[in-house]
Image: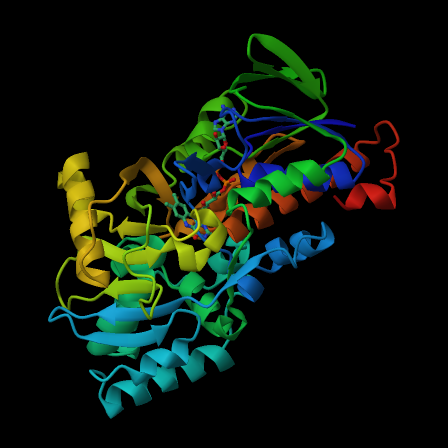
Length: 453
Ligand SMILES: Cc1cc2nc3c(=O)[nH]c(=O)nc-3n(C[C@H](O)[C@H](O)[C@H](O)COP(=O)(O)OP(=O)(O)OC[C@H]3O[C@@H](n4cnc5c(N)ncnc54)[C@H](O)[C@@H]3O)c2cc1C
């Protein structure tokens, strides 16, 4: 049957791939001139810069990993060890591995008592119950007790472990104070931490979406085609983009939540519209600093995570991109990614952010000549975050959708490619079931060759 997917980020592309696999014809509309959404790549001066997302997380990203394997791309991803160090206020450095939580127990500032507390809390979480799927809003909602991550961490891990373990990790991943975040997601991640591996497709994270649409044999992609409105058309829908009308039997709306609220406003009730409109997205900024010749080819670690006990730090992480993905920089060059925390951004001009980023890179890795470029990525709405109560609030919106309209997007969980891919695949499966139950035209059974790229 004819389906339309609106939005070509990882959620929409995963939905288009899944619908195509199920034998539906798919028309995917993307507002931008390339797919990928907040995982898009920007090519500049021979560099392939990540505008948003940086890495996949291996076994913690089960659906993304499974679909990459299904499309035959799992061996192409470039593994990244993620060797990291904490940078204390007095510039002391403590090596840790971003992919190994036990490595944080070697930090010398933690006392034996701190370490025992952390180990005990980790064991309790591991053995206890929690969401099996860290990216399924419905499962996460069941474990939301209204507690925030800072309160939980201080009580269960202690203040020092909060400052030296939880804050540096969460600042890098979500760039907001832990008090803004609920606990079921980080708890689910901690329980699965042993499955964590970092990797990136050779062309950058944006390639995940490109692979989906390439493998979606029954899908046509319309780029630079923002959908303007959606109308009912008998039992189906009429979608308007670029001044043309397109008919479909069912829709997946995979835009950001606030866009979905606008596109669907005449089809959903006021409560669902409010929940979508209010889904939280934070300000976000990061800076890519390019050097034609790497000033630090032998630096021992790839990521520096600043620490500042009790202080607000402007920067959450400083990353050497040539280590993350050697193909993202020209040979011998370096791009440093400086990732800001959200709270200070409201008071920082673009020039402040760029100046501070260059200073932070030098403080982290050592003296460097003038960079060849300093590129700022600044978002009004960068990352979706989940505070206490978030998952149940958003999950309820699924039930408010008209028949054969399904929502997809990372906002049902918490920012991350897996959240998007899981929601896109799920939306396609729900829509497929609804279309089959409504007894439409028989579907084409997908040929085996159609399932692979
Ligand atoms: C700086 C940054 C760093 C990140 N780092 C990581 C990371 O390392 N690992 C990770 O897993 N995740 C990371 N993320 C999060 C990840 O990028 C998002 O979770 C993911 O992109 C969400 O996918 P999505 O498809 O739900 O939404 P999006 O990627 O936002 O895609 C939505 C798409 O809908 C399109 N659209 C909007 N309106 C319309 C319309 N009217 N018509 C047609 N199309 C429309 C948009 O143009 C966009 O392409 C990061 C994000 C940012 C911003």
